[in-house]
Every structure is written in structure tokens, then in C-alpha cells.
Image 1: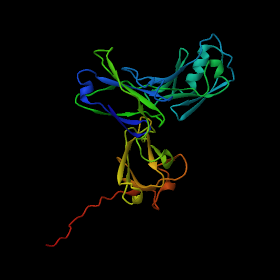
Image 2 (image 1 turned 45 degrees about the vertical axis):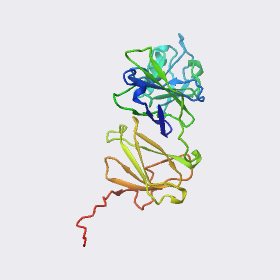
Image 3 (image 1 turned 180 degrees about the vertical axis):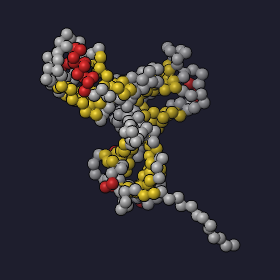
Image 4 (image 1 turned 135 degrees about the horizontal axis):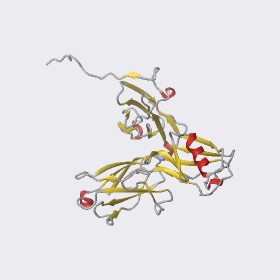
Length: 311
């Protein structure tokens, strides 16, 4: 197996057909945030998608009236719950009522409405947290279903929305027909091979939504770096393609100070930007980084019409 890391959490796995054809039919990925020795937490749950969840301690009553629990849902939605009663039923009802579109609560379990690896639930704090048996700073993630292996195909893209450069990943080939049979590959570091030091890179991000306010998934965002970008440093012209995830986010690491052209699939808009040199991240759609006087311009194809030639 080979693994090509294009950005933190974005990996292309390449499985030679000889490793699995006729033997295995799926692969699962586990992640370690404590080095290559583990422990590894599974990022797949067999044949189902799971939400991120916490289980509170089971008691007949909780001394939480007037106290608060602070949560962060899917890494972006802050939730503050103020409890109105002491019984398990009231506690669950208070949790469910505060953000009905984002949380599902029953039988002592707090879960995200979203499922898959894009789902996360973090206990930020609050004086009710220790009474419920929850630890501030704890974070749980949702799980994807396992990834099917397709006959004749060797390359597979994998995205961990919360992946870090310091993470390690372990891949296991599995079989539905022979559940006891598997093959585990050595750990894969989540960092780019070689390249520039992390300090010379900055994360660019953009969030796209449709006209109904819902996340716009699987939209192609393209960045083109022309030959004028620091040729003396050995940087070559290149195109960087990224797609928005289930929450409408597109993220990519870029060289600080680079001048690039940004375009979004499905629109006729293009934009020339200058990647910031300061900070840890920046909005790709921020007008302040636009090189042109106008933030956006219409893309005009350079097509020669009626070219005059002479012998």
C-alpha cells in the first residue's frame, strides 16, 4: 500500500490489486493522536454511519437546575443549555430543545443530528458538566461506514475533516464474506512528504451555501499558481483542486505570499488573490486579499478568432 497526503486529513490510498482482489471487499481507517504506536480510534463503523455522542452518568436526579452545559457541535455551532429540572427526562428534554436541528437526546445519550466523520461533539465547559459526568475539553467524532473496494480500482480518496499533520492513520482491509479475515498495513503519518516547513504555509478556507441556506457539498474550488510565483525558489506552475465537504467547507494549505487565481465551479467568476503572510488561516473569499480593484471578475476564455496567417 502507498499513501499520498495532499493536506492534513486528505489522503489517497493506493492498494495493489494483488493485495486484495478476490480476498477483501472493503477497507477501514483508524486514527492515532498519540504517535504511530497508538492507541488508534476507528473512523468507520462497519456498514453504518454514526453520529458523535456522549453518554451522561445514569442517576435518578441531577442537581443542575439553573446550571449550564456548554457544547460545540460539528466544530462550529456553540450550544449553551440551561437546565430547568432535575429528573433524567427533563435533563434530556432541555438538551433536545436547545438546538433541535443539531442535537438528538434520549436514554442518557447526547448525539449530533449529523453523522459521519464531519460530525463532532465537544464538551466546552459549564458548571453542569461534572454533575452529568462530562469532562470539559472532551471531544467525540462521528464515524463513516467502511469504504468499499471496487473491482479493478487501486486508488481511493479518504478525507478526515478534523485531520491534523501530527495524526497517524492505520488501514485495515476487511471482508464481508470472511469477517475473521483482515490485513493491517503499517501506520501512515498525516503530514505531507517533504515540501516546505509548516511555518511557511497557511490554511485557506471557504464555506459555500446554496440559495436555501444549506451547505453546498462537492463544489470544486480551483486555485491556479502561474509561473510568476517565485520562480527563483523553484516553485512550478500548478493547479490546486479542492472540493467542499458535507458542511460546505473547502480547506487547503498554501504558500504564504503566493499570488494565485481562484475560481469556483458552476460560476463564471474568477479572482486573483495574494495569500496572506501573517496569521494561521484566512478566508479565500475575503475581499481584502483580492489583487484586483474588483473582488471578482468574469472569466473570459483566451480564444483566437480569425487569426491571420501568411505563408
